[in-house]
Each structure stands twice: as structure tokens, then as C-alpha cells.
Length: 269
Image (tube, rainbow, N blue to C red; front, side, top):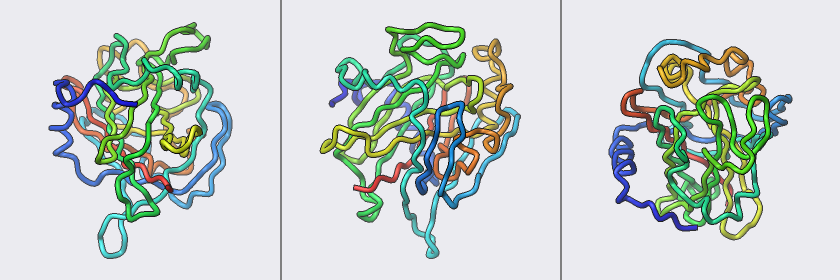
């Protein structure tokens, strides 16, 4: 699956420039099974939460990585999570979904999402033979493709997209900062498909720093929906309650210019 929107896209150039300022990219952790977005999830992960609910207007945040005793980077498997109630997997056979910009006109604070895939069985080398499918709700907590409480978006595909990783194991999506819906804290879903398999090798979710989320939800575009009144912290979220250490994106930027969120994703090949 090749994306036509390469480095000629000025948004992509901006994102890659911002990426030069990022350090300590989040690394990925042990498996845990999830239930539906309104159900309980269990976990065998030994990691603990690295973040807690907080307000404030900070415009940058960081995630925790995994390092070995000698200080060098190491990588582990991305925690396995539920695909949730709105995966819309039918789009996987739709060539129009192979795209970097997935907004489809939806308004919100710009977000560039960068995932870097590495092989945990081969010294954390980049994985170059995989596709990534991501999806998330809009700024008001609505998913495309479903009849859901307060909205019927059947036939729509906003905030969903598929891309192949590049020769560095990287994939980049242009989207908006996701909102929230009842029962869940802010997150983005993703699945990894190796070229050699028609089934997902990994299904997981991305968490975001609460200080940045709080500031964005106070901004003009998000004010109508406001702060998340249903889940106040990661410990109360049924997916992230066992910890976000290895799923927490490193985020840089500001509300006026947009954000870049980066996560390193460990896969066993």
C-alpha cells in the first residue's frame, strides 16, 4: 500500500522538522488483553502507569521509554488491546483509505502522528514490511462509519487511514487531536499488518499526556464538548488502568501550530 502524499506535502515537511526536536521516544510493553471500550480489561503487564490525570495548559509532554542497565535503548512488545466497538475493518479492502491525511474536513487542533515500528526479536531494527491502520474519534467523540449515541455516521470514513511504513520503519498520519466519549480517556487505535499476513500482528492504543489534553479541551474548537467528565485519569480507564508507560506518545507543539505525537512500536517478527 503506497501513499501518494510524500515529502512534497508541506505539513509532512513541518512534521519532520518538528520531529528533530523529539527525544526519548516511547517504547512498547508486554501484552494485555482488552475488552470492549465499555468493558473491563485484564493484563499480564508488569508495567505501572507513568502518567496521572492533570489539568493545566502545558504545550508539551513526554513519554517514558525503556532502557537497559547500561543506558542503551531496548524495546519490548506493544501491549495488546481491544480494537474497541468501532474498528470498521471493512475499510481495509478500500484503496481510497491508503492516505496520510485522514481528516476529511474535520476541524480540530492539528496532530501529526508518527509511529516507528521495530522488531523486538532482531535488536530493535526497523520493520519495513508492514502496513498500519489507525482510527480515532473526532473532536466531539464521534467515530465514522457507525450509528452510535448522538450520531449516525454510517458511510463516512473520517479519522481513519492506512499506510505502509517507509524504509526506516516509519509511518506518518496528518489528523486532528482526538476528543473523548463516555467511558474512555483520550486515545487512538491502531493495528499492524505484516505484508506476509492478512491478519493483524498487533492491535493496540495510544495514550496522550493529560496536561496537553486538558489544554486542548479548553481551547475554542473543543470547548463545546469540554473536558472529559466520564474518565478523569488513566487509572480509571478500563484499557489504560494497568499503565501507559509503553503506550504514551511523546508530544511536542502548541495549540496554534499543532502537535506532533511520536511512539515507537515493538513487534515480534
